[in-house]
Each structure stands twice: as structure tokens, then as C-alpha cells.
Length: 216
Image 1: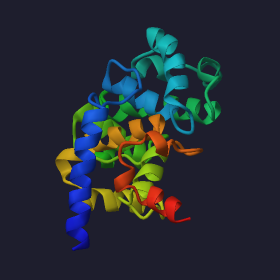
Image 2: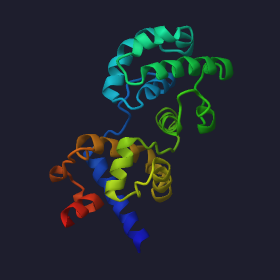
Image 3: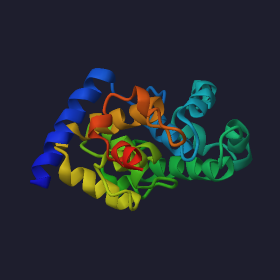
Image 4: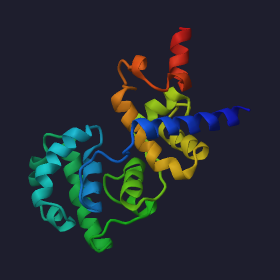
């Protein structure tokens, strides 16, 4: 019975999200798979808005693996220093660019196994690239997905790995990519980490967090 209810809940959420967020997609600006990869590496623990500010200038001059591979670490740091963890990210980007040139002919690989070999690429980043660049079914779990899916009762909220497992096991694969984007949009618009705007939320009747708050 619980499984049937969860399926019905998921189906209703999908209908509501598709109505309120009709154009799902990454908010990271990019014009190529490689640019998306770099932007995603830069986005760790940083807002997409800040990444887009930096890449708007960065990608005008540097947008291919060979461009970044030729930079010194100090040069790379200076170009992205307004972004959090910029020193590590500079190192990752140069190393990844060199590896793409040496091992993949300058092309971004399209499998999770190969993407995870790249410097600065964890499971979330790999899944973002698979979903957005290659349209391969993947469910990236960032802070928004982790928080909102737990509040809605779609996941247990124990950890990122388990959240991805729960979501991919319980949600039809054809919705993974769009639902990932919808949940992020919802997290940014209403279901914020601090002070979620439950009063203006269109899915409180489906929300475990809201029901618990009312009980409290």
C-alpha cells in the first residue's frame, strides 16, 4: 500500500512541477560539453550565479582543453579567484584538461566510469554531465535535491549516496533528468534551506516536512 501511495505522490508531484517549472534545465551557462564540465567543477560549494559571472569572461578566451592545459596553476587561480575553493578547482581543471588531451582525444567521455577518472569530478558532477550533455538517465544529487527530496518524503535524507539510490529506485527513469531540475528549481524558489516558503508552496499537501511542522 505504501508503495502505491508513494507512486501516486510522485506522479502528482511530476504534474505539479511540470506546470510550475515548465522549462527544466541546468542554470549553468555553457555552449559545449567541455564548458559544462568545467562549469560544473567550478560550481562545487558555489552558486551557479557566481559561476556564470566568472565563465562569462573565462569562456570567451578559454573554452577547450588545450586552452586550460597551457595555463600555469597561478594563471588559472587568478581567472577564477572570486569562486570558492578556487585553488583546488584551478588544479583540478588543469589536470582534467591534460587528461582529456592525453587519454580521450580532447573529448569529454560519456560514461560515468570514465568521467570519474577526471580530476575534480565526483559522482554528482559526472551525473550532471551525463544528464545535461549526453541526455543519459542520471539523477545528480546536490544540496537542493538532497534537502527537498527528504522534505517531500521522496528519500530518507540519511546521505547523498542513499538519496540517489532511493530516488532512482522509486522514480521512473524517464523522469530522472527533469525531476532533478524541477527539485532544484523548487529548492531555489520556495523550499529554501532557511525559512522555506510553505505558505506559497503548491505541494504542501504532499510534503512530509510540512505535515510534521503542523503537528509540531
